[in-house]
Length: 212
Image 1 (cartoon, rainbow, N blue to C red):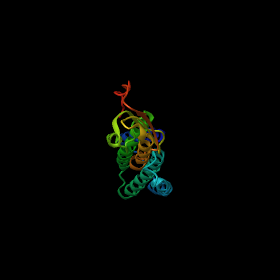
Image 2 (image 1 turned 180 degrees about the vertical axis):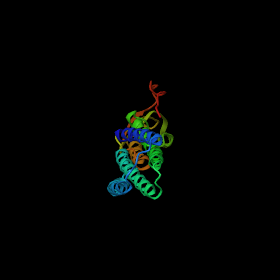
Image 3 (image 1 turned 90 degrees about the vertical axis):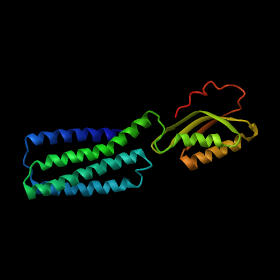
Image 4 (image 1 turned 60 degrees about the vertical axis):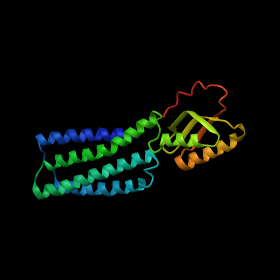
């Protein structure tokens, strides 16, 4: 979340400076810009590659990847701008490319911020289909009802679940829990399920309060 907020704050500053330079363009030393930007591309792109493989399964890694990739993209845009300004002597190119970079970073960062906020609010992780989880639990042998189902992210890589299962065969408790725990892990990547068994002999006062 901090990475997302930092990137959004950075693009606001870049956009403000770009708009200001439309009104009063300032001279830029093209070759200096090119060499410094080229160094930035190499360093940031290499760092981003280190996070490439883990970006889908870990929100923190994705934040770091986007941060480094955004920096590499900015450096690339700056380098291209430096070359074009040497060739054309158009000072306004600096501002135009800056605004394009702002749009690119905003699109990639917005989803990161949204996912981070959802995790902070204990929402269902985006990669988990809560309706499919409910359908699976309802399909377990001897299960007649599922309620008080909650799914939330404990961290960027681990997901927790709690649910009440109403069953009509008390002697199958262990088998049902064993199957549920295994399938929740294999199908949905839910590592920490907590299942409460009920027999329907009394009305559960929480049965209408499932969150998904």
